[in-house]
Structures are given as C-alpha cells and as structure tokens.
Length: 266
Image (cartoon, rainbow, N blue to C red; front, top):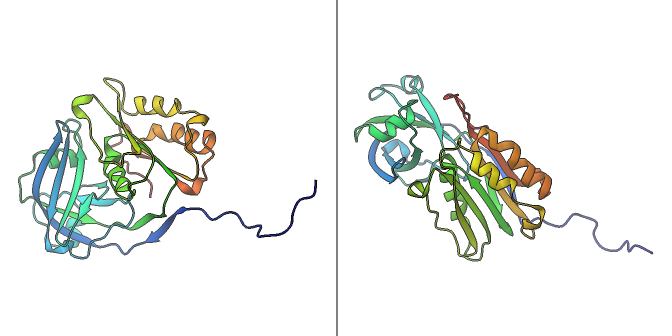
C-alpha cells in the first residue's frame, strides 16, 4: 500500500478550545440586596453596589473571593482581612451581581451569611484573578457536578445554541432539592439523587457507569466538579474511557470534606 503524501499533515482544526486569560484583580464593596430560595437548602442572593461597575467574569468556571466583614469596611485592607470563601459568579450587571449558595447546616461563614444576613449587610468581592474561557462550539457537552457546581453549569449551558447535544448531571439529596437547568432540547438534564449517602458518591457511581460506547461523537467538552473525591472518576471517564484531550476538559474538586478553608484550583 502506498500512502499519499499530498495535502496538509497538520492536525484537524478543533471546533473549540479553552483559553487561559489573566485578569487584573480588583476588590469591591457590595451589600446584600435580595435573597431567593430555590430549594430548602439552596439560595440565590443579589449583591449591589457602585463598585460593581466594570465587573466582568469571562470564564464560566471563574471564581471570585467573597468577603464577609462584621460591618461596612473602611478600607480595602479591612475588607481583605474579613473571613472569605470562593464562589462562581452567576450573573451581573452595571451595579449588581448574583451568586448561589448551597446551605449545609450552620458550619463556616458563607452559608450562614447567605441564609440569614439582613438585607443591606455589607460584603465584598475580589477578582476573578484569571479565567478559562471556552471559545468555539463543542460538538457535544458533558457537564457534571453537585450543588456547588450549578452556577458554573448554568453558565456553560448559557453558551449552548439551540442545536446543542449532551448530558448534564447534577447531584442533589432528593427530588425536593432538584436544581433544574434550562438546557436546549438535545441536552439531557439528569438529577442524580444521593439520599443519605456522602456527597459525591452518587455522582461518582453515575460517572463510572458511563462507558466507552456512551461517548458522544466529535469534539466533546467535559466539565466535572464536586467534592474532591470526584476528580479520580471524572478523569477516568473523560481522559481514559472517552480519550478526550486533557486541555479540552475541566475536572476539579470544588470543596474538600472536613476542610472549610479549601478552595478549588484555578
């Protein structure tokens, strides 16, 4: 057999890519303006403030640091000294920003604040300091996460066009805590119920059940984020069984059991 040597030997152009962008970090004073409970343990809050003018978050998986001072801080240094946690921005405008919080008991600082702080309570945000931006159009999508990943999943779904195909997996305790996502008709949204099992266990089992024959055709974008233990099964699916390029997927632990200070890698 004679192999043809005509034509380009370059690899075929991929229909999408993840582009890293550095961003200038700015710290902004805000106040709690509204609270909406989406489930008994999941709340969306709106922050407002003139400092939010110019805010941007170009990557769907971006993280900002949210600060929870006792009162209105008098300086950036005082704001940065307050307790803080990292969250993904959901939506924003000229002077407002929305975030979503999974509420698990009264541990930590962020969840109790999101659940009980008085309207008008002071807060602050910093960042994002960098972004991983999806450009182009994947042939198919696999988005999977627990409650903490839902803001990022919502933002990825917002990038889909009407003809998008794929699968969204969201782990929640039960049907009463389901977090619907408004995806195109070709994207299956599945609530993975864990019951009383440890967080991440049901999503792990669901990912492990996806075989080679369930890989969508073409260039697939994969995003998996939940408790740190999800990283191994997420990589096993996307990188090993589905053979997706490592630079075209995101797999990370958004939180770590028994470590309140843990934050996801950027």
